[in-house]
Length: 196
Image (cartoon, rainbow, N blue to C red):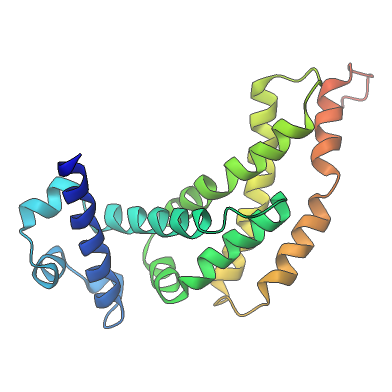
């Protein structure tokens, strides 16, 4: 337990250093030496925790988002949950915008997917109670809606997060409203010859 705690403190110190350095220069100009000297640890210690800077960035994104969402686990509805994902990203605006320009879209998608999918999967699970639908079909529905949300969010980030995110979140929930239930219904109904 003690070692785990030390490990978390080191990772936390690296996160703080990364954020400090990002205020001064872009991510692609930050080296591991910059981080280790700012943080006061050895390169070996860095590599013990992370493969490279992008690995650290990914950890920071997930760590921050998880903390932000845990602190707000007060939502009663998944709509509020989506809004809170926007809030978590917005609260980290300087960091996210810097990272967005420096790492691949795939990595950002994967990060947002890890945040969004459990939320949507919970809705699918709830709405499919009693329906004859397979786990694979449920996963597909959850992924489909999660990626729709992520696409909208990536555009918002790309445009500098200028647009009012509560309005975007409301548009998303209005668009999705009822559709998840319909998707589940479509899967659980026998084929009516409508294919093609």
